[in-house]
Length: 119
Image 1: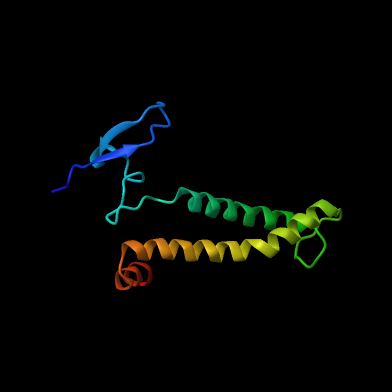
Image 2: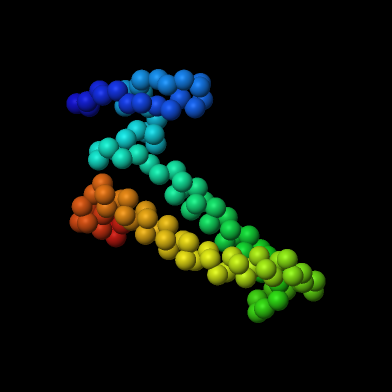
């Protein structure tokens, strides 16, 4: 039996604050068992990093360096973007993976986490 406790919603869509029970909220917005809410900033950083990886691999064709497929025309702007992304994307993805693991371990035991992710 679920406990019906009121949850404050920011009401960004309709502009006002509304009291809703957990059953009335979408699952992604409902608080978890530990009372924490989903971190959408981490989700958006992860999505931006993945799209940046796609942009990096698309731009590397137009930059100097060793790559299997090359275009004859090179620009300094694309080279700068490729160098910047290649230096920061992988470390950013590791930091985001660590943050996701930290948030997951706040809600689960290490045994539950490893069972969920390994097996």
